[in-house]
Length: 234
Image (cartoon, rainbow, N blue to C red; front, side):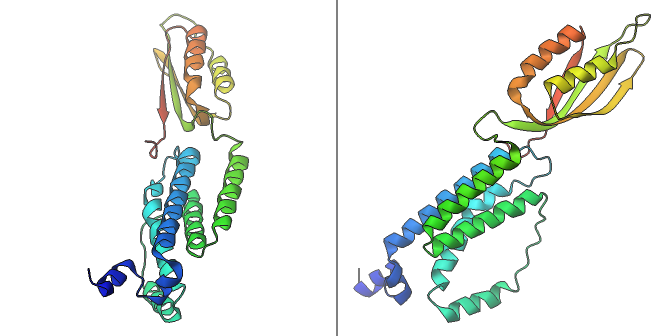
């Protein structure tokens, strides 16, 4: 291979690339990719249960790599950076942001990518460490335990004609004890059954077994359905 073509493919014919080097550039791209995977994991761990999320975490790897590459390319060239600024000023993204948390995670990916591209690797570590602490404080320290999900519980208690009506308040107290932090969405008493709808936030899946056992003991013959709002789950 001719030396000129080899230098062109390796990027060493460019003065800016000579200052960085091919291996350091690949290292920066690898660090950026690891950071985006970490951001994706944090998003899935803390916000995958949101009912209206757009699964924006799927774009994090390409977004982080693109931002890192752009800033590596332009930081050594003022004309190139000004030209890119003018070109990007006409770009408009129409994709709606459905959850406010998504904006925060996108900004986290952008900040980490820019810091990586400018060789502030210690800053990247500090950024993610502080982000994890903030998320832990916001969500009560739930990160390595069972996933906690949002959803609705619908309990149906059959009531035969001529028998006393079931005590709905006892059923509500049972649900509040097993699934704290929820509230009654609707309560309907039909001719042959009592239907209670209970919405909750942050219930661990391992609570389903005790909930079923308590319902069978408190209301024999009752049936229940649990609907999880999990568009971002794998």
